[in-house]
Image 1 (cartoon, rainbow, N blue to C red):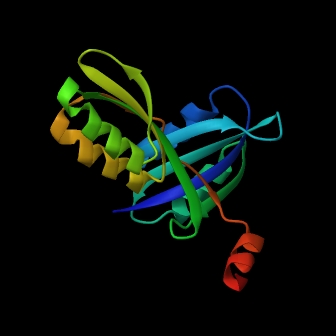
Image 2 (cartoon, rainbow, N blue to C red):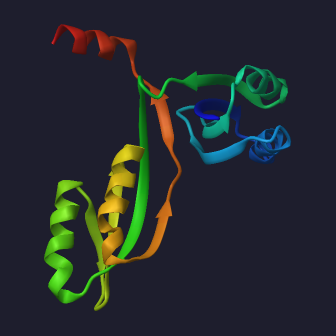
Length: 166
């Protein structure tokens, strides 16, 4: 199965998230990530759903039938903007902190907490960047890790044209 990224504009009403996740679960699809947040319109929320599925046409048709769903867009991972935020606490003996700080600098990670035994980093970026950071600090010992879930939107077509020119 392949991963699909759906951007779903919904009315900001109770139980919309539950109905959408239930629909996906009933169809046997694994939700890899789901993030929900407000939009510029106070009455709307945007859900970014990353789901493992063989194909999405039937799922999109089913989602459209839900009362509070306004618009569904499947985003192309190659042409969309994607970000996650991660907090990761790593074992950090005093002699290893310099190495961890160097890794953090390469990934533009921010140290947000330091204790006698660990350091906690905040890392923001594309999912691949987040995963690469995890793999580089894994040998030091991951104490705790939490990710926000992916958020995504399509690139502005005007932006693409400007990049093509420049």
